[in-house]
Structure formats: structure tokens, C-alpha cells
Image 1 (tube, rainbow, N blue to C red):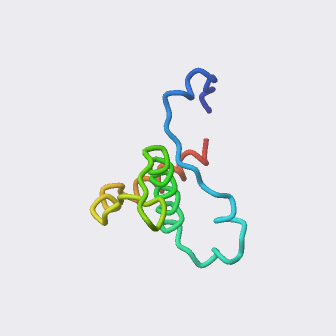
Image 2: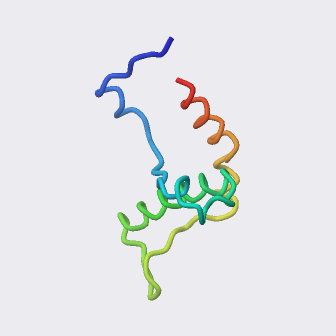
Image 3: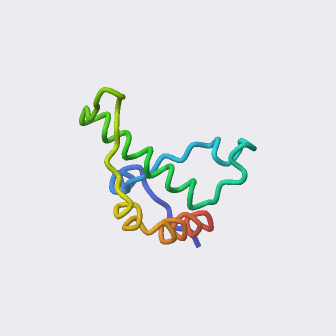
Length: 87
């Protein structure tokens, strides 16, 4: 049985943007699910960089080290996404 979520409750959740093209466009078909999720995380970091006006001569940049990537635990995020689909 699924639990109903009310509009006021959604404010407590944080979401990553996941471009539909990563699934529907055939040129991204060979990308792994982990790579697509990582792209969504980096897209979120880019939004933060724009908000904080982090730019140099080349344009907007993001600070996202390999250590940050590993801390995100891609497999855990992927598992969470798959479990939400079953609801």
C-alpha cells in the first residue's frame, strides 16, 4: 500500500534534477546509470556555483573533487531511486 504525500510535506525533501534526455536520447544510451546520476549531482553543484557567482576567466566553475564524488555513494543514491519507482 502506498503512502499519500501532501504538498506541504514535499518541502522537506531535496531533489536532484535529472534531464529527461539522458534516458530518451539514443546518444546517451551507452552511459551507465552511475554516470547519469553523477551528471545530475554535478548539475546540482553547477546551480550552487551560479548562485554563489563562482566564476573565473573561463566562466562558471564547480568545486567537486574525486573525494566528494566518492562520498556521494552513487550506488546508494541509485538504490534509493529504484526503490521510489516501486511505490
